[in-house]
Structure formats: structure tokens, C-alpha cells
Image (tube, rainbow, N blue to C red):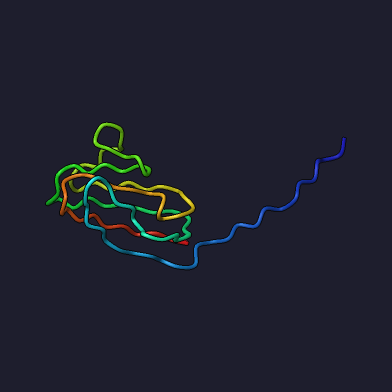
Length: 99
């Protein structure tokens, strides 16, 4: 029996690091205001904040991923402006992404 040949898959490593901070405003804010291609992002909620919520453009405290003070969450996603945060207005969250 012959082995099946499958085409090779090219793995392209990230080539750029993107970092920033966003200030939460009502009702929610994207991590980027314009399309920003990425491969993944890590979001940090500083110790001094209350809980923040991470999700899509409809994220709320009722449906978002709870990010406790001092915690981080990492997501594999293709665009930074698809990730939103909400919480107490004026709190600042940080992110580190690669593309």
C-alpha cells in the first residue's frame, strides 16, 4: 500500500509585535479603531482595575469573558479591531499582539 502524499503547509511566524493600551468607555471599545491584522493578542487587566469583560462588538458584563484584576487572556484572532473590552469607564487595559 502506498503512503498518501499531502501538500506541505507553510508556517509563517509572526514578524511584528504590537502593543498598546485602551481606556474603557461606555458601552465598549475595540482594542484598535481600524483594521489591524494580527495572529494573536494577550490582554492584561492591571491589578488596580475592577473586573473587565472581553468579547466581540456586543460584549457586556452579562455575556463577556470576565478578566479579573491582575489577570491576562490570550486569543488567536486575525484582527485586533474584532476584540472589544468593557467595564468601568476610565479603566485602562493593555495588550500585546503579534502579526
